[in-house]
Amino acid sequence: FVETAASARENLDDPVLRRQSAGFIAQESVHSNQHRQYNDEVAKLGYNVPFLEHAVVVQIKATRRVFSDKWKLAIVAAYEHLTGLMGHHLLTSPEWLEGAHSGFLALWHWHSVEEIEHKEVAFDLFRNAGGGYFMRVIAMIFATLGLLANLFWITTYFSIKDRSLFTWSYWTDWFSFTFWKSGFFGTLLRGYFCYFSPGFHPSHRDDSSVVRSWQKANP
Image (cartoon, rainbow, N blue to C red; front, top):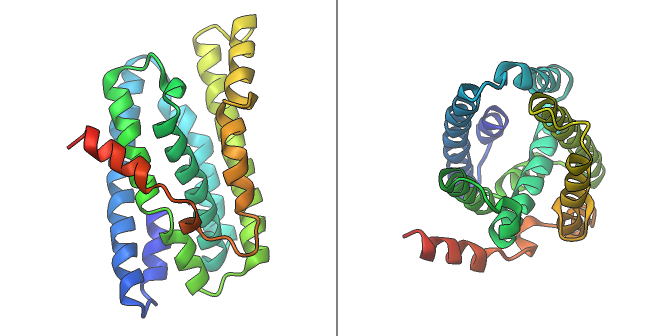
């Protein structure tokens, strides 16, 4: 994400978008560092994090090699829409992280706010580069499949490691959280399909009250 945004920023004339893209790069760099620390803590619990990361690394390398800069911007914009949606619902659906460790909860809430704060930048960079509707839609389908594949890969690994893959409770909980109307995809569907509207822009979803509520609770 950082490399793609930095490359696009080199050709920007719009001072506002240049400033916003600089903020996006800074936030994503911090996110990368926090994810590394988070993964290090997960590894201490006995999970093979490099094994989990391998599939993601393969995807990133393939994307770098196969896609043009404009297509990479389209894919980043799609992922940023998805992470912005997830951020919104992590902040407004406390049941998603019910029972989580306080440090884990604080990290994901902070991350969610930052995803919301820069949700428009990659989309605007993509449009500034001449990206159109067809490319945007195809990129979203690609990003969605990539996200689903990663979720399946990671959750399957954890369930095998925890010896819960073949238990009834695991699958009922998984399907309930993932597909029920108040679960992961159930709550994301409306915002997800908005992306396929020709006139879509991330600013059409007003998250300001959500961010203000978090800031008030975390001065």
